[in-house]
Structures are given as C-alpha cells and as structure tokens.
Image (cartoon, rainbow, N blue to C red; front, side):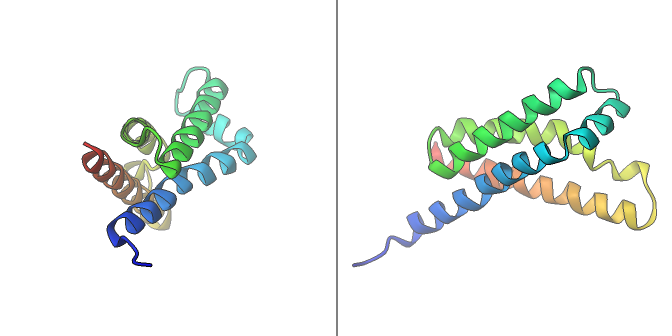
Length: 125
C-alpha cells in the first residue's frame, strides 16, 4: 500500500505543532500559581482569568490543529496567542547572562512556532 508522503508529513507536523500547545496548556495548569504571579507582576489585569483564558485557548486550538479541524483558524489564533505572550514570558531585553540566553531561546522558539502556524495557514488556503 503506497503512502502519500506529503499528507503523512502534514499529519505529523500538525501533531507536533498542535501537541506542543496541548502539552503547554496542561503544564500551565500545574504552574497556575507561579504563572498568575508572574503575569500580575508584569501588569496583566485579572491575571488569573487571563491565564485560564490562555490555557483554554492554547489547549483547544492545539487540539484542533492536531485533528486537522479548522486548522487555519486555530493556527491564526495560536499566532495571535504567541504574539501576545512571547514578550511577556521571553523578555530577554530585561535580563543578562544565562537567563538572557534562555529567554532569547524561548523567544526564537516562539517565532519559529509562529512560522510553522503561518505555513499551515498558507497550506490550507
């Protein structure tokens, strides 16, 4: 039985991209207290509510990407999510030394994820 390589790669790519956000959302539930405090310290109003909105958004949109359902919409939502949270959690410009390097890596990783989602959007048009 021949395998359709492009469709197989697209399926695996969707699993990896969407799955990263499902896992991140579930991890954020475990870190609720820490993340709420961090967000409040960064001036986010209603930090706990904002955190839970983000958790629900990233988990549901990630699952939709994995399933290939409303992929373009879910990908666009995750790009907007990345644009809003990346400066808050990966603010490398406020840090020095190893902490700065770690935050630069997170920032660049989020930029790459946004690129992956933009690719999925383009593929579905």
